[in-house]
Image (cartoon, rainbow, N blue to C red):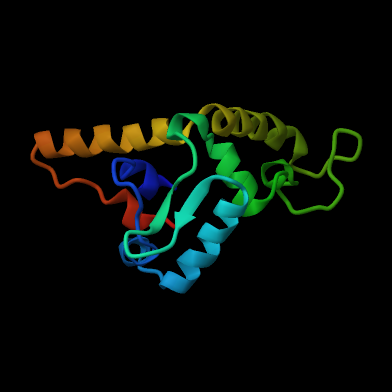
Length: 144
């Protein structure tokens, strides 16, 4: 998603191009992109100029939207220790410490958009180049 947001000027990006950049097979990338397409976050186009593009503006996609598709809607609400039952009524040993942190994380990923994260990457890259440091290659360090 970040790769697509950073290349939003291009109409479509090939799964092969994304796979090469991430060091993943086109087949694996296609499986992930299928999940994102089924959720309406990306759209695909077949043919010689086909590929994948964001289905909506990056300003309209929160990081939580992406997490929900990839890890499930309640992924960030699960018990930090992995207990099936964990609530204020039946807390795990970490519940009291983890609950406010989890709340902050949820607020952050709900509010932060794909455009904001892509913009931060661009700003950092530009700042590094201006100061003579090599730009960090964030996208090669992350997964889809």
